[in-house]
Image 1 (cartoon, rainbow, N blue to C red):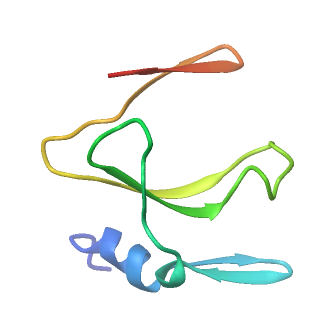
Image 2 (spheres, one colour; image 1 turned 135 degrees about the vertical axis):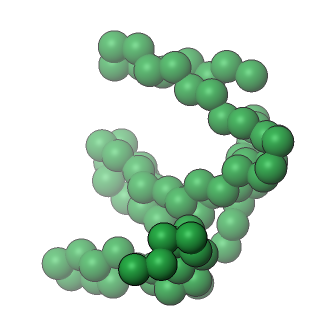
Length: 80
């Protein structure tokens, strides 16, 4: 497998196969992150669909930008 372009393979041809559905990534639009400049997400599965149990995203971070998240016991905090 060519790992150099793995991210683009997920972006353009990736799929999530579920027991009752297939979610193709290329039809999902990129959304700008509301807090972190230069960070975009594809919302593959949102917490609304899982009753808040989890969410699943493809994350794209622009060059020279960063996303810092500190995980703490049952809670998380964003740092700039």
